Image (cartoon, rainbow, N blue to C red):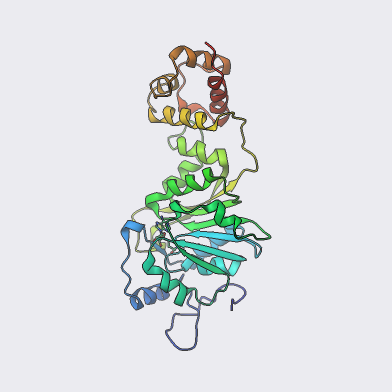
Length: 309
Ligand code: SAM
């Protein structure tokens, strides 16, 4: 049975016959579960569990979840955020790599939710598009996660590039990563990740989260960022792969000019071809890549794609 409304923060963890739901956002409850199962945090899996009910509520509010929605959670841990997601969503699929945590989720912390499915897998090896298509819902598919920091960017990029029918990703990431994702052209944080994220989504930082909201405490601050997928790409580019190769070549050699970055980036373009494309796009040959936005990179990719020197 799922209780409606918010989880009552007064319900503390008790190992009794009678079920009392444990809100793991309360530190004592998390400590009780850790002690009961003798869990030692797996650093290699980036395990930092949330212990702050306000932050958990903020994540759920930012994700804009309805009872018609399917939520995929990456890395439920002991089920802290999952409990909140189960209260808000129609269905939750929680994908956890650490097999030692699965029995705790199934038999204890999530056992009273009949709208959760727990999958023991590495999210990077999962076909997210198939996972969503096999679980049709009336509402939208959303990804919500307190991501393991050691693989934040690969996970986000994999979801974006997969073209899985996801409406939004609401993810806790390292503060600097969130700031890079929503940086403006020409700033220090601006880079290939900014452009990739903005090609697929509109990013918005919803909250900053200090390190003391986690157990164990990480040595970096965090932020919750909402990446709302575009319905259509914001620029018209004929060859996406070429555009992203240009972006990568340009930021790999940040201190050099864009012209230099592209001609020495192993992309197979001669200096003459690149200069001709620059002329078509009205770009100064001395410009650096960090000054360019998506429209300019798209135009350059289109011009180079039709090179005729
Ligand atoms: N959601 C929990 C919370 O907010 O307290 C735990 C978040 S913890 C930062 C990240 C979780 O992701 C851990 O439980 C970790 O085991 C899991 N994880 C790490 N790598 C993963 C992967 N490749 N696929 C699925 N889960 C992963």
